[in-house]
Image (cartoon, rainbow, N blue to C red; front, side, top):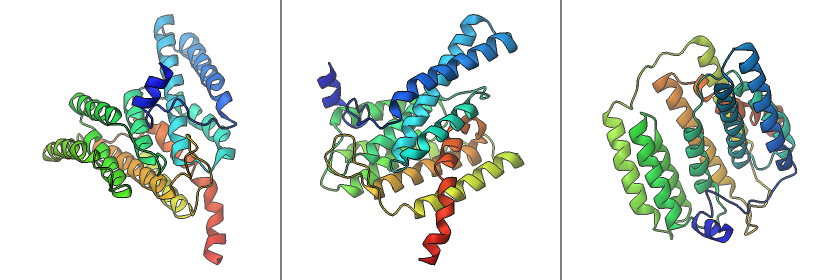
Length: 280
């Protein structure tokens, strides 16, 4: 079973992902977060036991998925994983609405893009992700086809000899055009001042952090070569643009606060290096 999943989903599921030193603490910390939220919701918010358990498990899963996205976008920052995970986990606790499927969608798509430059996605997982995109597209007005199609297009640009992406790119961008004709699926374009501050400061810090990403020394999951810095940069910018569209087009900042906080956590610590880079 393990080998079958590995062969069908080599870049999205990644059963053989090389573990880092912090990985063994992620599950216990996620469960601790779930336990704390259960106590808070059951005792303080007077929720039923079943509702409190369901909400707590959602928080734990969202926290873990956010961590997996973090290590895709910041593979060179293992020393920052613990504080970033804890801060992101605390930010998840007050969220009333969580978007686990959207977070999983972002994770899988980013993994397709950040895979080793010497490794290829399977046709099965490309087809699976396309079906996933179609289902998500019909269930919500979000940016799934544009995000997925852009990721596949960038992947094809980085590896033009692999033409399997082309039909899936075409399907994604046809859906994206329909999304554009719907007026970007926009529900509202108004942001409160605090949300605007979060978006502006985090986006600027993230862009500056990417400008400092000269090289990445971490070996990739399957030990087939070095992670490609340009793939990591492309994935990071793609996620940032998507979050900005969700914020400006849908006024959804706090719904995806876990991703904004994660982005801030892997960006702001690098700002201290700007002066050193400027001075040469």
